[in-house]
Every structure is written in C-alpha cells, then in structure tokens.
Image 1 (cartoon, one colour):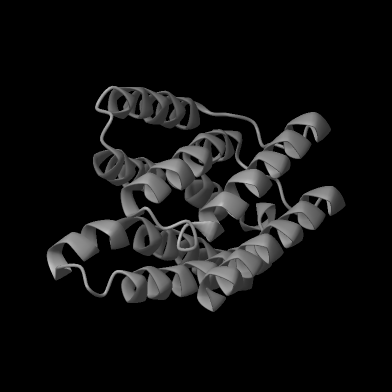
Image 2 (cartoon, rainbow, N blue to C red; image 1 turned 90 degrees about the horizontal axis):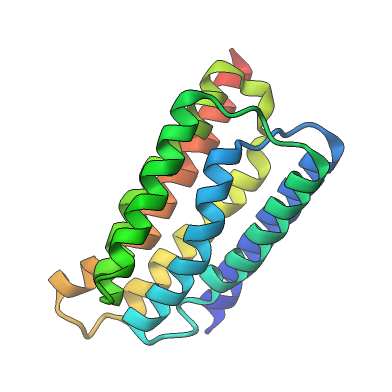
Length: 195
C-alpha cells in the first residue's frame, strides 16, 4: 500500500511541475504525444486494473489519467502546444487506429500489452522535438515520473510474486515500458540542454 501511495505522489508531483512549466512558458508539449497519452492513460488504468485486479497497484495509473487529462485540457485551452508535423499526425493516426483494434478483442491483458507498444511509439514525437529543440522541455517532471515508474514496477513485482514468472512479466510490461520511456526523455533533456 505504501509503495502505491509513493508512486502516486511522485506521479502527481511530476504533473504539478509540468503544469507550472507550461504555465510559465518554459515547456511546449507535443500535441500528438499528449493526445495519445490522454487516451492511453485512461485505457491503461482501466485495462491494467482489470487485468491485475489490484486497485492499489494501479493507483499511479488512475492518478496519472486524471492529471494527464488536466494538463492536456490546460495546454489546449492556453494554446501551448507545439505545431503538428506530418510525422506527429501519422503517429497519432496509427496509435488511435491501434487502440480501436484492441477494443474489439475485449481481452484486458492483451489490450494492456497493445497499449505498451502504442505508448512506446507515442513518445517518438516528443523525443524528436527534444533532440531538435531541447528548450521545449524541462527535466523535473520526467525525473519524477521515472521515479514513479520505478516504485510502481517494484510494487507490481512484489504484489504478484506468487504468480508464475512468465505471467508476472506480462504484467510488468506496462510499468517497465513507462520507466524506460520516461527515463529516456529525462536523460535526453538533460543531455541536449548541456550541449
């Protein structure tokens, strides 16, 4: 229970930092990535909870879904998004189509695994933006989100310790994917802003 709360607090802290960076004009979010993340956050929370049947292990994802929607709506209303390019639009269409396809399967674990792949692809427009224009992002939120995924990955692993290892790894796919993608963004921001 403690790890679930700690992960949710890291997640909420990351969103708070991100909001204030957008509000202050030091962060320009990518609309393709954030549109996909709003959809994924809600779907991920529901599918991970249904697949794992563990509301506490899913707490970070529910907190993230609500706060992700808040950030998206604020950035949209404030006109704070970067302009979309052809690659952004292509990835957005691909990810939405993929989400529509898994919807018809009605299998929570399979759906959650599809979301892992979509999530990995959705971070590309943001990463490309950071590489080309490092000043569009700040590392604080990404570091806190990485910490949240470290804690959640640990929590899911511990809570499912009686499950066979192969099945446990299927459930670990989402938190580990989140950890890798958020840590990648944080490292790229730190690296490119120093050079």
